[in-house]
Image 1: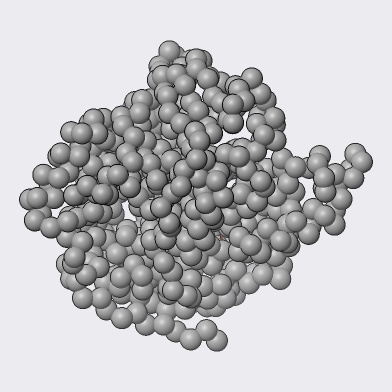
Image 2: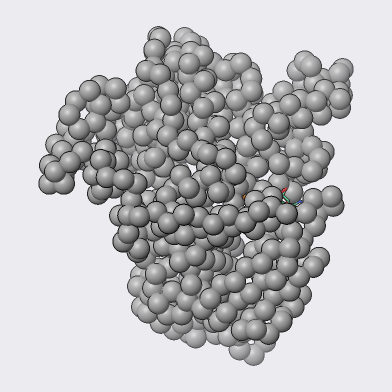
Length: 559
Ligand SMILES: Nc1ncnc2c1ncn2[C@@H]1O[C@H](COP(=O)(O)OP(=O)(O)OP(=O)(O)O)[C@@H](O)[C@H]1O
């Protein structure tokens, strides 16, 4: 099915979120939508999915104008959408989830489960999804839950599938699998609109790329463009994709973890007897496949999760004896993995969210009430510094785009005097320009002498930021890699080595295996992408377009 968006305009108060946007998606095309945070990508997709009524413009399907009064109309017309936060009910089975809310219901609304089960199996087999129709949603990894959402859309005959930042919550392996699935869907004639901030993925899979900036289409880019070209087209300036930092000058082991264990209610050891420290003036990155205890480790440091054994000390003070509030007051900056549950209060304003942990202190407290002027002035300053795009600091934070909400959390947590910074997935959902800024701020915090603990599943981020890398597997630290020491050796730290450690291979063995891989390649391959480093920037290993010649981008003038 051919999809055409013509002159789509969507206005929120004084803000023009979509300004006469034109977009054509051909049948069986993977069309990537790139744009900085707040550019208007999700808004445009919400218009296409019938969630928003456009203020101007029209949608055409196979040349016929259509008008959607809600998602039901969009689904009936062949549009499917997989949201970032899945809409699945944990206690339902896959078949029940797929059956929920659409027609295969019998008399009196009884779900035709057999029909749903049959469709799940048929679609799963056809595209190699490996999804069991009788599995419970709550037992499935995130990547499989996402496939259930895709099956749900396909079972309703979606011809155009919208994937809004589908890889933000996936492991690298799940991402590769999703990219494979997208290729299969394309072969079957399904069109895909793919929103992502990860340029590597865009280059790997997109047939066409449209770039949006401040609500307007600013150009089309070729999938053979380099990441640097795509980045500058997205944010309108050149972006340094690697972090520049001086060698660390670590001080004393200010933050210490000794024999820390966290046990799940079912008896599983989530964090298993961890002992390590973070020195002032260094960045320790905790790397690992999601679900190997990193989340619990970060949460126990702030007190969101209870420790079952062990000690945590910051500058000699026992942290476990203190409340969350006391730990924040002791100078812990904390960026949570899940922004929506632990990072912001959705109904509070942007300004209020920026003082969540400071509301009863100077200069914001005025007796038992707040000083609105001080709260607003703080918000203006912080949002400008972190480039948060908003209409008014008094608007609810829920009106912000995902990336801008993340920047509010970062601005709040990184703007106080810190004695320890703990940040989980700090740049999740951020555009490349914002990532560059946040990484610089993290390095500045380190250079200020603060111990910094970053939990990240993004290997690029880990390789860019870390002075030391602790790799976690099944609740334990497999090994701690000293990046400077490792780089002084022949091979340096590679993705291969970290990848092996993330699968539980001990550090020395992982180093040896990675070196062997490199010697097979014959040249240094520090990023482990299978392409020797001396080669010019080339398409990613999973690229479907095998060319090394970047095609210039075409940029439209902003009117
Ligand atoms: N319901 C709403 N009310 C008011 N403003 C909104 C609403 N939804 C979106 N906006 C604003 O519209 C603009 C575009 O937001 P949108 O979510 O479409 O951006 P995006 O390109 O998807 O960004 P990101 O990459 O950060 O997810 C933002 O400035 C946002 O604050």
